[in-house]
Image 1 (cartoon, rainbow, N blue to C red):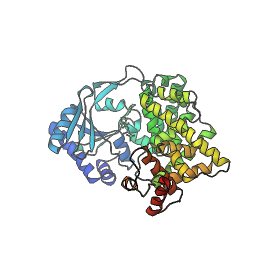
Image 2: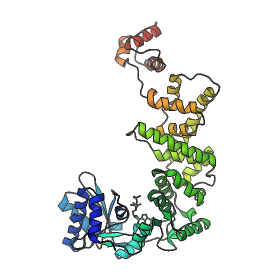
Image 3: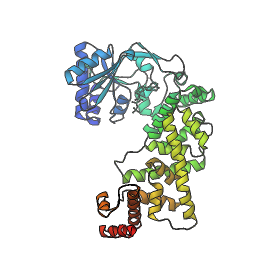
Image 4: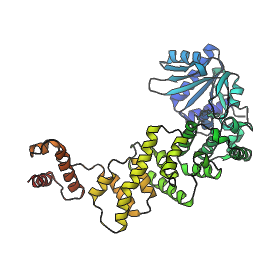
Length: 433
Ligand code: ATP
């Protein structure tokens, strides 16, 4: 039995002071309204593992919306409430959020559908969760602050590092849990319990995952691909036979494994180089995963995953452009021909980071990798020293010619043919004459 003060000590160790204070304040609001308040779910799981989880989920034994509004009024926060679900989000002035739910029983009208909600007890609320490790609650009311509530052996499973469902119909009820099991297993370094794994295999054999809506499938896949080490998750999906539910043509071949390892290498190189540059890392893994698919199969996959038409076309276009643009460069390099910096620049300019990283990972040629890396590190940010104003003074008339002249100057700069503003001016004069 974990003591209240041990939980409090964990909070002080793993959470910022402010978060601990907010937990106390939530409990105090519960005391005023005479409602029991609990922190629940992933937040508690991670806390007991000594980690902070910024998503604070709170469950109130009663009206969650009233609770959220009362708390918000005395703490200068806003509330966004969802009457239908009895849930609310408390938003602090700095954007920090707390999700508030009322104890409730969600049941599923059909597998893969969104749940219908009714009110129930805390125990029933926790029983409807995916895995035992997510069923812990901590009481926040002042008299019992820090009391750990463990109805389903969650603490034991946390210590044994296992992911276990609460009942045999769990995956039938909601097949997304199959993917969630893999995600938690890989992220936490846990193991899916034997019986739970058998239930996954049964669900796969009986094709329960076919009923899973595209959006939910996409969301789970993206979350796996967003994990720190997505390859383990992909391997696990493959070994459990899940890839065919995304597309029957998907298969984890040794070549694909090789490309995925290259993606891992390339994205960590890129992240080290450009700490702050935003890009969709998961999309690079996704493109690699779909490597063997034809363009038509790729479009089918996007349709299965309910990717919006606009984004689907964009992804397909990126895939095509990548091959069309990088392919010729690769062949030229393979023939031992020289590729100038300006050619690299004008070939790769306009391609999104995701496709460039994917091309870098997938290319077997170290020369292509070198060209793309050179593009990122040196060529990408290169600009002529001459500005539009300078060109006007040199007598270039604004219009299409302007762009052309600037591109010639840029090419010369990229290829090291000019280095100063005087060089560039001389080049433009030469061009004009
Ligand atoms: P993460 O750190 O990835 O956000 P989390 O545990 O907070 O992990 P969420 O997806 O935010 O996960 O879900 C919050 C809680 O809701 C989980 O702890 C889990 O108990 C419950 N939950 C989420 N999805 C399901 C599901 N499909 N079936 C049952 N319970 C679920």
